[in-house]
Length: 111
Image 1 (cartoon, helix red, strand yellow):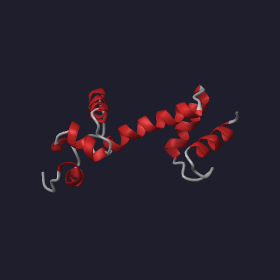
Image 2 (cartoon, one colour):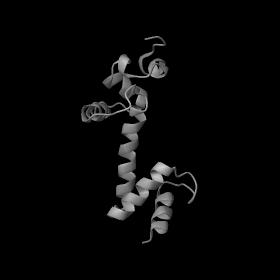
Image 3 (tube, helix red, strand yellow):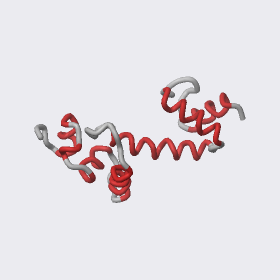
Image 4 (cartoon, one colour):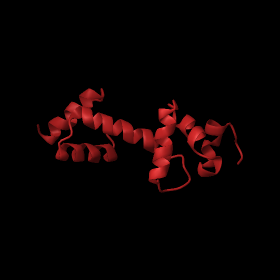
């Protein structure tokens, strides 16, 4: 399978028109997955897990993410938190989260 075919197959698997809707970050990850031999299913699993983490990390004040932070995210998800706002409320203190996300996560507007 060529890289082009891999991209097309991935797009079909996530119901995205080939050539549309793939960000530069995801395209780079697809290329890396292709190079190391990940199957399309493995790539989908990888991207899903990555998104579960980054969707929460984007709301944190810190520009860095530690292994402990990731463990907190994964533990909150394992405990049943589905949406990023629920993970934030379950796993992080308000002072760790950007104020613009406080209302959604903590029901607060000023912290």
